[in-house]
Length: 187
Image (cartoon, rainbow, N blue to C red):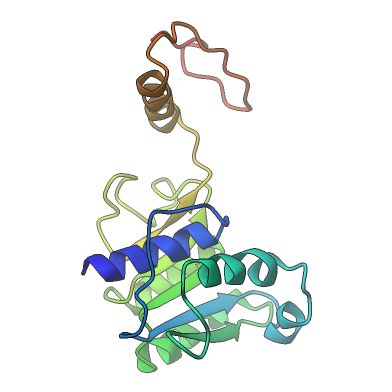
């Protein structure tokens, strides 16, 4: 289970090409990953600047996941029609993918209705409010990923981690689109 979690964590990080502590297994299991895009797959494959090609694939390769050796990528597209997500998720579940990577709130909701066992990695602005997960610490289901949520709980945790890293820190200036509820945070 630990190896599977490390692999899913790597995929979640690959969405932003963020460094993670996950390490790839050399030899052994071949991971099958289903990616569902909104745009045609041919468009994505032909664009070397697309983040999937330039960042995600490179990050997976850097972690030791190599297509044709220990990684199979099943790329699918809803061809601009998010309502097709359920059908494509069902197809990928039938192929016994280890994880599904999907973008878009509506597509993630549809994927969640199709499977409760295959992990789904997605990007969501506010996954709790959107009903994708129970809370940020424990999703309460098979959806995980990255979030742009910068609410008080997340920002408070970031301040806590910053304080741990810099023990002499006494004041922090916060510049952002969302102010703290009080407009000010003290450490």
